[in-house]
Amino acid sequence: MLYHQENDKLRTKALEIRVTDHCNLRCDKCAHHSQYLPPYEFDINELKQNLDRLSKVLHSDRVTLIGGEPLLLPELNETINLVKESNIADMVCITTNGLLLNSLDIQFWELVDTVEISIYPCSFANIKKMLPMLYDSAWTGKTELRLIPVTEFKTVLLTEPIDDSEIIASVYNKCYYRYFCNTIIKGKFYKCEPSISIPALSEHLKHDAKKFGGFLDICSFDSPETLKKAVFDYLTDTTPLTACGYCLGTSGVSFPHKLLSKKEIKQPPHNAFNPDLIQKL
Ligand code: SF4
Ligand code: SF4
Image (cartoon, rainbow, N blue to C red; front, side, top):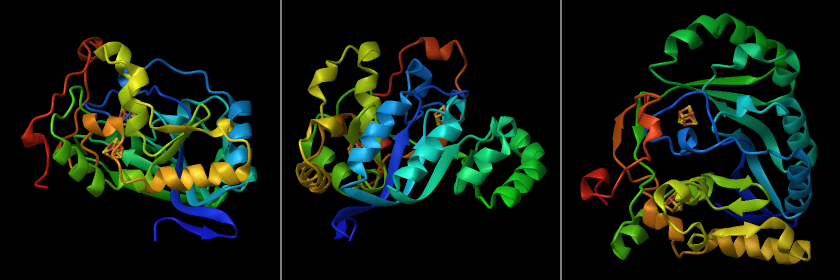
């Protein structure tokens, strides 16, 4: 069971907190659209309020800080500490491209439970040089270190809608991001990360951002009971989100990882749907 009740709370597999939008890399078809989004003002007090509310009704196996690149967050240690103190999850993890790990202090390693480094062809040599330092820091901090080679990306986000409700429903039904990427950002609870990134690009793509919705405003519920019911109903809803019309979820085909040039990211992204982008459904 992906969601069940435990100690009067909704138990989930994974929760993500998006702490920044921007990144120090420019990966082609980044599923966060991070190269096109400006930095956003992360508010640690707002996160505290939301964790206070959500932790009364939900507990997750793990919570992961994500970006963009989460190591760009100035209040990183304070944020990890806050998440730990909220007791919303059994462990606190961070997913990073790793390039800034040599600038962090030992307190970071002592606070975080797991560091997952996505290693791309463009960053492999730098991460390899850092390995002795990474092993020492992980040993001292008693931190799990996971090195994940990423030579291919899946196509996830589209810039044009899929004009076929059967394809949308099929992609949604197979999509495991909706179970493993429940995400909090700016006081809102989203089923998945792409449903944040798709409307975020509306300004570039001239979409009406308001039509997307598809999230819960954590502060708008007047009691823990109403919030818990709303979160459960939302997570178990079988109707695709509006954002699913612009997304291939976990059904997109893979392509070799590549970095975009600064010139390329000055153009709005373009990734229109065509049936070749999707794995056989
Ligand atoms: S490192 Fe991650 S967040 Fe940064 S551009 Fe690449 S895929 Fe996006
Ligand atoms: S927008 Fe829909 S298809 Fe895309 S990841 Fe979210 S639930 Fe899956």
